[in-house]
Every structure is written in C-alpha cells, then in structure tokens.
Length: 152
Image (tube, rainbow, N blue to C red; front, side, top):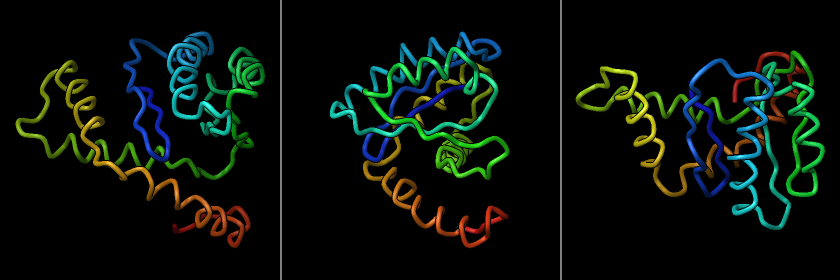
C-alpha cells in the first residue's frame, strides 16, 4: 500500500507503507511528508488538505495534529459515510492504468513499487489541474443529487 499527496501543480511524495496504517503511523506521515510538502507548495498557508474518513485519518492523534497545524494549511472535514469526492481516487486509477501499460509488467512487490513511483513521477505537467478544477462541478452534481449517487 502507498500514501500519496498532490496539489494543483505539484506531485508530492509517494510513500510505501510497510505495514497496516494506524493512527500513530499516519501521524508520522503527516508530520514527515505532508507538512513539508504543504510548507513548500503552499507556503502562504492557503493550501487545502483533503482525505477520506479511513480510521487512521480520523484517529484522535491525527485529528489533533491537523488542528494544531490549521494555520499552515486548511483541512477539509468530510462527514462519516459521505459520498466519495476525493480526486485522489481518479489520480490513483490513472496511476494504476499507467503501471498496467508498462512493459515488462512488474513481477515482484519491489518492481511494483518502482513502477508506481516511476509512473507517479511521469505524470505530465498540468495533469493535476483537470481533476482539481473538476471539484466545483462534482460538488454541484452532489448537491443536485441531494447526496445520492452522481456522475461527474
């Protein structure tokens, strides 16, 4: 499993998760990888961090850390059982598609990690703008559907 972060203009790190993600391990990712990325890419403090409600993301330690760093960047709060609106799902689908097209295909877990990291770095400049700019349309669609299934 990997953790990743990106913004409208920049691909952040793709981090290999060696074991099951817990609140404490996620806290380490936030402080060691998210914070430096946001500090560089959004040094004005206007960056917005979006995540889903996975158990480690909603842990007390992660929630407290995000609150403590609210002056560094904003955090979107997603209510439990809310529709999936995170663009990272689309980006991960594109990443997996890129890995599937590689020749030769990855054969070992280490080959897969290398292919993921290489494909992540090979996204063309400007790729991220399309999914990021789709957010207003996604939200409008969700509102029209009153929180129900949407096509965006």
